[in-house]
Image (cartoon, rainbow, N blue to C red; front, side, top):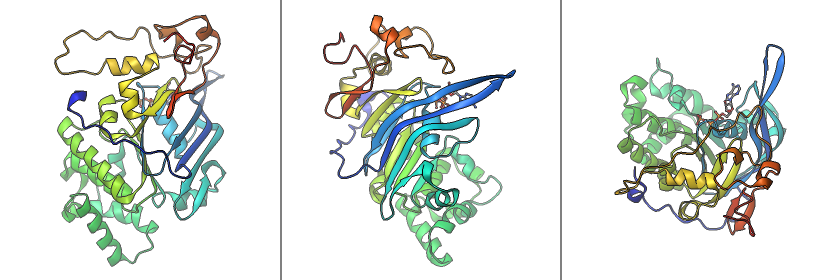
Length: 347
Ligand SMILES: Nc1ncnc2c1ncn2[C@@H]1O[C@H](COP(=O)(O)OP(=O)(O)OP(=O)(O)O)[C@@H](O)[C@H]1O
């Protein structure tokens, strides 16, 4: 999808009250052993971010930058070898207030899943059992969290499907009888039927063709407005971010290197890595060859000292090889981790 054809994202207002999600100093490493040698892959390495109530926050970055590891850690949906090694994840849920996820007992965690926090995973279609009709997935996952008798529960499910322009007949279908786009819509309906305050989505549209993708993105925006939830949305596809998200965090090598309101990041990217991501988007009528970025993302078991982007950075200077730049504000609602982009810098 060329960016010119995309809708202008909604402008966000400043977050009112406490954020829906506050992530502070979050670190999670894959702790693996190879022939007796222990290695730590620092996939999530010091993340600070907030998601406001009612906003869609996008997380972008190339493959292996740590996006999936980060959102699994935020959802506390991790298992070894990925371990939480530090930092906190605090949600402010409507009705029940603040919950620090890594301080919760397992039973408390189960109680907030689906009802307050739901997670559409990368291979999310697999949440629909291939050998059972769709209605069983709603019965198994949503019913236990809704405090409703069965007739009222099914009425609620059908009303939710209808709002999302899905016929109630999908409940009687097997997943393989639905198209990919339809299955993904059903998965999103399942993740939102309990009207959770917070929905985490990992690449929910990546496997879909552009036209179907557009429909599913429209549905995500619609359901987010309808139930008033906050969404943390992950994809490497910058065109999707331009179309959907209110704010955008760019990840590189386990860290956020730039964050701002999505239109600002697209209009005036400040980190050289973000500039590269945006410059490589196709544009109508632009026949100029796209220059690639030299080098590869670093090995997160032995990341380079200083700025992790420095071995590939066109603006690198001596300080970048020594000191890791903090993610500092450069304008209201705009933070960048780059020595060159800071006031007095050379970008
Ligand atoms: N099971 C594992 N053991 C060791 N390292 C892992 C494991 N899974 C992922 N990693 C490493 O963690 C880092 C982050 O990977 P992650 O999958 O979170 O990135 P991503 O940005 O979500 O990529 P993609 O878009 O391809 O899903 C990568 O360096 C990856 O090689």
